Image 1 (cartoon, rainbow, N blue to C red):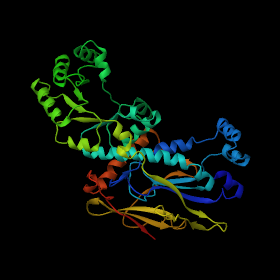
Image 2: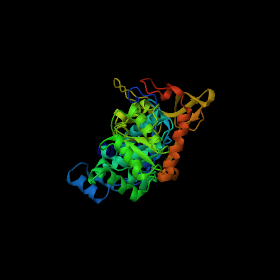
Image 3: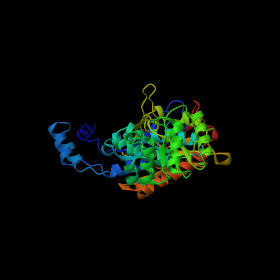
Image 4: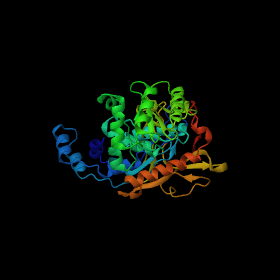
Length: 422
C-alpha cells in the first residue's frame, strides 16, 4: 500500500484512522483498554534501519522511492485515544491517528497487535478481579504464552487489578510487584517433603508459602506447620476439588494453631472457578493460562480503519466500508460517556464531527479521548512505570462508573449502548 500510494502521490494525504472493536468477546458486558503506554513507546522506537532496508531491497518488497521514505520514517502525526485502563464498548474509537496516509498505514499491525493482545488480557483479568471480590490475584501465566507476550500480559493484568506477577522481567521493566512459590519439582528434588520444606524455610523464613499437595495434602499441611511453626505465611493448593479441600485445610491449619496462615490456590483457575470459590476460606489466587489467553478470547477483535481524509481541494471527506457485517461509520468522532444517577454510566454517545468543530464540547457526559501524541511528541505521562500506575488507577475509576450488572459473569449484552449522534 505504501509503495503504491507513493507512486500515485496519495501517500501525503492527511488522514484519520481509528482502532475499534466491532463487538466485545462473546457474552461480555465491557472491555478494558490496555497496551496504550507500551504502544506509545514502541511507536517512538519504530524505525527502519540498514538491516531492514537491505532485506526489503534484496527481496524486492518495495521499490527505491518507498525505501527512501522508510529510511527517514519518524512518526510526526498526532494520536488521541481512550486512557489506558478505560472501559470500552462496541465501536468505541479507542485510538485515533491523525497523520498522512503513509505515516498512519504503516503503523496498523503494530497498533493492532498491541491493543488486541493487551486489551484481551485486561478484559479477562478485570472479570477475575471482580469475581475475586477483593481477594488478591497473582498473574502466573508466563509459561503459557510467548516470552515477550508474557511480560505484556503481566502488565495488562496488573492494570486490570491483579496484585502481583511471577514474571520478574515485568517487575524490572514496569515495577510491578512480583511474587512466586516453589514448584513440585523442588519438593521432589529432596529426599523427603519435610526436608524440602525445611530447605525453603531456611532460605526464605517461616513467612514463605509452602506447596502442600505434591503427595498427600493432609500430611503436607501437617509437615508444613511442623517445619515452619504456627507463623507459617501461607500454603498453596494446586490440585483437587478446591471448594471442599480448602475448607478442610482451613480447619486443619486452625487446629494446628496456624490460624493466621493463609491459603492460596492455583490449578487452572478462571473467572468462573474463582467465583465458585467465593464462599471458601481462600485468601488469594494465582492465575496462569486463562488470563494470558484472554479466558477464551485471545484477541480483543479490534480493527484499524480509515474514516476520513482530505481531498485534492483540501476538504475533509468521510469514508466508510459498506461490506456486509463489516460496515464502518465514517468521519472524525468524539466519544462521550453519559453518566446518570450516582455517577453510573448510562450510554456511550459517539458524536460524528468534522475537523472544524472537533474541539467543541458535547454536553452531558465525560469526554473519552485524550491527547497521546501531538505532532510527533509523545505525552510522557503515559509511559513507563508511572504510566502503568496511572492506568491502574484509571481502571479502578472506570469500573466504578459501570452499573453493578456489568460484573455478572453470565452471558449478556454490553452493559451500556453505543449511540452515534450527528
